[in-house]
Length: 461
Image (cartoon, rainbow, N blue to C red; front, side, top):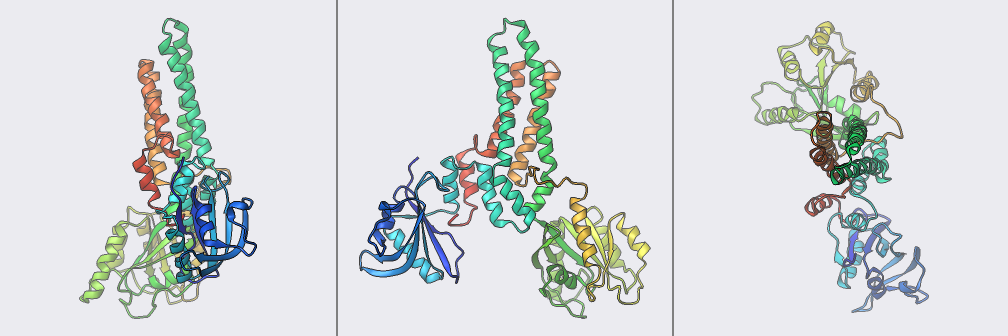
């Protein structure tokens, strides 16, 4: 498949030792030859593939030296895109790398669209769609576990399993076709239905196993939206700082210090949390604080986990009890803070209001109880779940949606076969299941979806 030659900056913008401008396409080598001079006078077109060469970039129009560089040459198909790839390693810095990119573009390359390098790898058969999406997951991974899941999908663990399921369905469909094409053989249908039920039941069980990992996988991929909730001055900002291990929020004895939403990502026992420290929820005449309280109520609706902070040195107030009522149908952990002060709160009443949820006591001032809280967070979402290196996790929302659809259609096929529905009707559900699974790896996906998916990638990837 022939495409024009694309180029983009493949390293983060900013100051650094090295920046990379990447080219991919049939004319990547010829374009670089126009602007690259090595001390020995050799052209890139004359050297071996997968080698790196020192030299300078020269503007052909002015003969001006633009940069001192190292140029890597990789000829297709043994490259990420399966096309000829050139990577120009120049000095890091916004001015330097932009000068190199502009020089490349002026001499025949086109600026790559977001995700276009990975898109070409997919279109050229280097990777399938699930592996392509895993590239972005790897870049965005915020914990070791999330990175391992992404690496597994990049290596094709999910693709191989989906391929096995689709192969089983193809074999089933072939048996059905024999039954339809040769109806004169009475024993064909007797053979077809048991085989169909066996294959479809196996596929259904494998899909269910994948979906069992989806909640855990989705958490690893996207993180938990975790809201720190409580009345003013109970220690919410102190809790944020303790979990982040950094003073991100202002901590004072003055109620209402936090006026707006503070967000921070943190890794808690392998669980990525998007921590949100909210303004203390209370009735207030302060206009700015009132806006913060309203924002707190809004993020509360979108939260996956609530950390409700209670002051151990005060009796439970009506506001505390109202907060318990507000979050009763959500996942939450109660943090009873300030245990270093004389205790006035009724812990038994707190546990009663918690209604079976974990209650953790802390003194954030003395950094006590934080480890127990981290363990409680991890246990809440991963307790009882299988964690194994060879487990195939499903973490992508698109994949999860498609697997649910496939589970429905394969269940319909099994139900039809068990209830003596004509085999050619059952075939429709089996075929639809095969198509849905194909959408996961990109075998039966529409071009519009491909364009949408790759547009979410960063530029230069």
